[in-house]
Image (cartoon, rainbow, N blue to C red; front, side, top):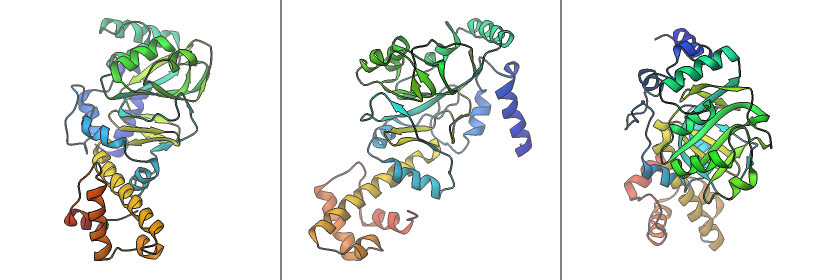
Length: 308
């Protein structure tokens, strides 16, 4: 498929409900767009990053992961400037994406009729929640709408947390701040809080490519949301980014310890390591085990491929 043909197809999916099946991409199209992912998938084709990788991702920081992605050519994966329900609580998981547009009665009627016929319940803003599973993060492009752009309140927040055990990312608003805050373990990254109800918006895409600020998000991307902002890691890059970021973190912790002790100079720690430093690092790791295991061969491989 040519680039022009792909762009035409994506535009059609974004603009015309007749091409959508309950506003979702076909499995074949989703597999095509995420073809670099070679692992397990959900029945609809969404990449299924293993739970073990999601747990390891809780040990990495935005800066290290962003640097790795940027060096690999992924320059549009971060977005900042959020209102956060619990700034101290990261949100990590697989993206379930939703795209909202301003409502139009004729389109809304057609989409509601077809969606209800396919088993979707209630209004369209609840449909993405019906697709969520454990380890997912609901990510919605709500056009940055605040007043009458509240994607959820505490009722839907409870439903989301029951299904996922995590939280949400909305380029829009949410309501019922106090009620959402009372859900243990739930977190929300939103543009703002507002007491109004959701109005005059329509779910136009479910598990489709979306834009969140300056970031592009595909279904199944790894969401890494921290107080600094949100990084969307392509599924096929997740393992490399996570393991390399963990290594960088361990390397930096060791380096800081060596500098504080006065054993090595900044020039020795920040540049190519000598064999002596490498051996000391491996010994230090035995006393400070981390989420990944290293031997001399794997250490040399990380350092030789260094682009950060």
